[in-house]
Length: 399
Image (tube, rainbow, N blue to C red):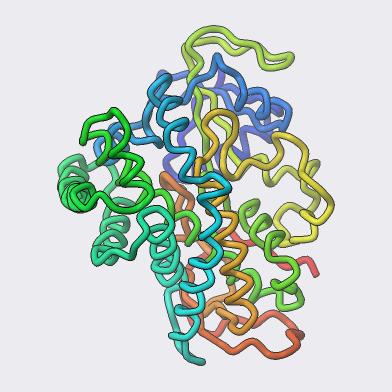
């Protein structure tokens, strides 16, 4: 019988240990549930595109908050929703995005002052939410602060249905107001679909919460990594910087699929019922795929597309993140603008503890001191200046 595993203390370390011990496909038990872990790129590519492996049913907490929105729905409903919402991310819809990102990023940069200490994740969360609101709703919202505060409550709520229901009620009020206005690309599309208002609210809340938070965290990591590696030119390598940050710190750190009946993945046979896990925090750190995987090296992505299944920060297959195009455009353009004039120097340049929640986040807000970027970035990465008391994971310098 496969070994039992306790993920309570450090799920990422547990998964990495299993992959190291058992190889391409590990098998273990959590309580009385059989679980597989695929870590080899070829198996991951097969799994993400396998029609016999549907997305695992979401936990009650996610469903309580998001209902049957695109992130939590299953099967035919999810496929129908994707088809209906995909025009929101089409090339024609994207035409206005660069101007919006530029305008909002410039406005943020003009507010910063040398020596100012800020919470990078929170600061860039405000930027990313502003961009999402203008791209999807055609307007900024007076409730943006409430949305950001609600997200923090959600991330810290754990399995507390009563609190999640309170938050959902609050968000329903915003969704109802937006539906009543009938304005903006997302709202107009939803009102023209043959669905009820409950599902419309589910989609609005899913989009508002999902369209900005992971992008904000990715941008915060990018600015930290650029400050620690001043020789990297963000202007010419912005997309590679974002790609490498997503390799090191993928927000979607774990993906689960259901194994309802026996299925073959390459040479392996998976028995059902079981859960199949795939984790970028395992595969993105395989030394045989990514040499010196803990190093920050944007140049990895200057050599063409990574092998299939070796890089999947946005998932893959039918359940790939619908907002991937928005995330890439926003992060790449915003990083280019910010890094051209500012450095967000870490208050503590040491390792950062990670929180593997529904999305991977730093345990702190990545506090940083704002500094004007010199004309020619050079010299050693800045050292620790204050105590933050945040040990554990870090992308180390290999220069």
